[in-house]
Length: 445
Image 1: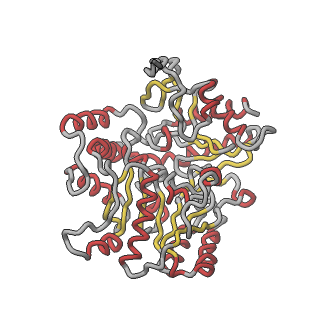
Image 2: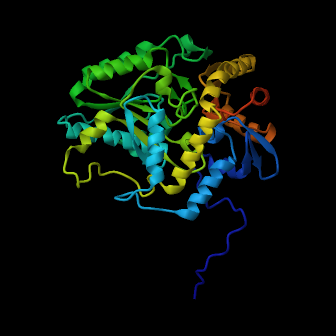
Image 3: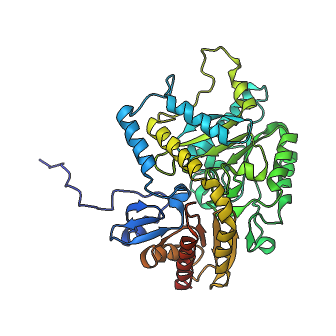
């Protein structure tokens, strides 16, 4: 008889885990394994101290290993590990929603919780479609994203997203989706600090799409105030205000995807405040728990929320949600994180640090193969020229060299190096990151 009992796995065998957004074969040939983190640093499994130039993945804005957050999660796990979010609630969820709404621009007073930026984007798109349905404008079913935009990996977010590699393997995705052009023009915007002067007119592309499809068919436009995952593309001066004017004129909802820009990355609780624009919805995730627990959500304007509250009081208003919406441990992490942001004034700190950070990153413009640098808030994108092995190879080499040889962690998008350190970074630590990145750039020249 054939023995079907499996052999015990080898310790730390790498084969079983199919890693996300990762070159699995290359990783497993030379793993970048992390064992711990504290403050501004990760610690590798071989004992090296690696400075974090990426805030984990745009999320650890208050640095790593915050005892306040860990303690809050532990206490919550002992008191209440899980409660169903459908038809039941926990006090912490309502407290956290109130505190998030208090940080948001006036009018964005309602929060729908989920578990990630991807779920937040899909939630916002569904709310937009449902809102027009209950408002008697069911013909508004078209969704507009933007080239080079990133809105997660759900079918909705992938459809409105505009990063080719994220889309090309998954067929037609959602129908009725179109895209604005990217706001980036290297010839006219290269080496910009903050919002580039050139490019507000890119918002006028929406008028062309309105003429093409008809305003009465368009439900919503979703954009990132700063397109992060594609390589840090700040919105041009005046672009977001012009987009707001056009959407309001045509009755189209405007969604800001602030999964990356929320909670201090651009010096404010939300980038909408930085730009003086009131969108109809804001998606958030990442920084809300400092990366310590999965959580995302959507801030929704009163007018949209209230439109759903017109039916029978015992009827479900929106047939949407997740088993782990407003999970007790995530709520505890979120409340502790907001305490840190407030008590340490990290949003204000980021605003004050922005000029120093921008100057430091711009010092890399003379390094070999640097063709552009963009900075906004505590975020920077450094474009390297492709090498002879094709697009993306030099960026990947930089990622490996940074971790293995120079003890610095960064993000990459093709041949773009993205620097997004925790908001607690000191001037000296910023200098250390820039020095190490310069060595990496030279190493892959």
